[in-house]
Image 1 (cartoon, one colour):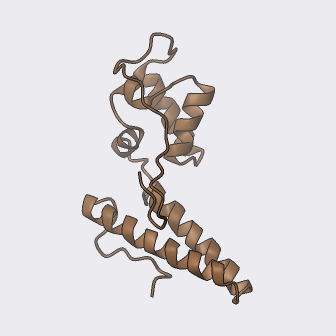
Image 2: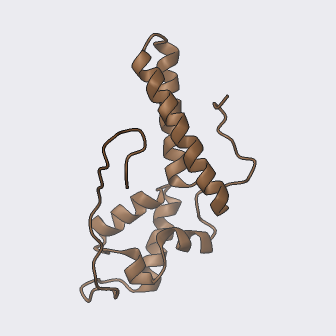
Length: 145
């Protein structure tokens, strides 16, 4: 994925395994993995954190390979999905953090620019999620003016 506010076109991320089936060495069945996902969600973990914990602690390399569904699809089916998509929530938190910094340091011009960029990202991601139906059509970023 290219960067939004840079000239660079960096891409990151690991390659997914070619094999579509769940590896033989995974110790858990589909039902057990879904139970673990729901337990971790009850602990208050976000979907990305659940995926990391499944990978690191339970040895499940890919939820989609193990269950045939994405982690967020499983959460939606079980009515445990987060209210706001995770990427949008993280961007809003970042913008709020920058805003609180600017309240204490109003002359920080670099932070002012970063706040503008963060708000632009929030608007762009919110437009995407509105189109996908993940957030209500009338949702707007509260600090947006």
